[in-house]
Image (cartoon, rainbow, N blue to C red; front, side, top):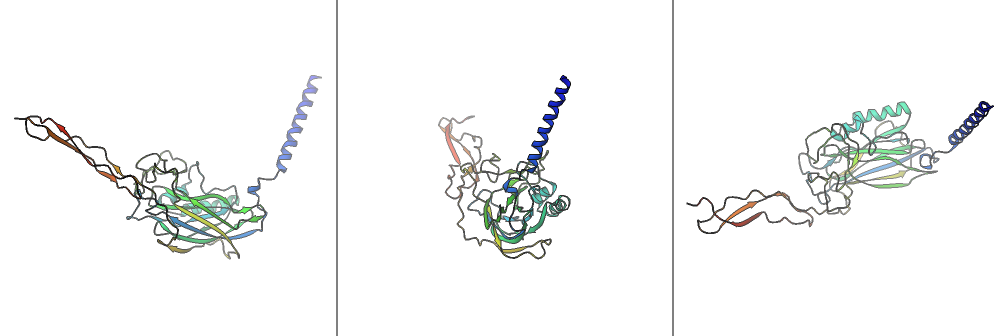
Length: 329
């Protein structure tokens, strides 16, 4: 009798589980992942570099090479694909692109994702920008089943730093968004351990994860983006997506169109204060003076980084104090 009751209870529990599973399978996905707008939408994308010496005066690259931006490489895709993701390890393609600006491996990864799991609708690209400030643009096509957009632009020069967007949804329920503008901040791909723009290649072993670079992280004075007086870094770039009419005829081909480069951005760049940095004091020198009288000895330090944009001025670089001359004859 007890066995029959046990079997009955187990069967009842099993039926309840089945009903819950059946119900959950009928539940709609989150609203953000569902797009019921018209099947296709065409957008222009304008990338604007805002990497100026006024905004980022510390170790600003002026030559070999000067501050500039790599070509932008992106894709439109569904929610189950990520070109890169914060707090996760970068793929080999992302590593090659963020360290060297080589796009071939990343493009093959995007194409492979599109072929295997049908998660990518298309690839788009712009030309490079040969200075820290300037613009590049192109057009892209999003699909109602692939309404997300991701892209990367390498910061040049840098160890493995880039800016970009991970899985921005261009669709809002039953309609496509008309315009989206985002400020962009630097990311570290986690594959190279350099602290400065011109650091030599020094692989991170084991590989880290993609992290956002802030004014205080990495917390190291040598870091090119280390500005301890700032709460937040100013945006180093921005991107604008604008919905346009028409349709790209051959979206399988990479579309590219540079609209302008150089110092053509009319926006007022914010000036980031940079405090003077000096070295530690040298050892005290020999005590100089006549025997039987008070002598003086000196120590010095040098400027490691000059102040800029009303930052704290440099302190004095030499110091003197009294002493008693030694070894007098």
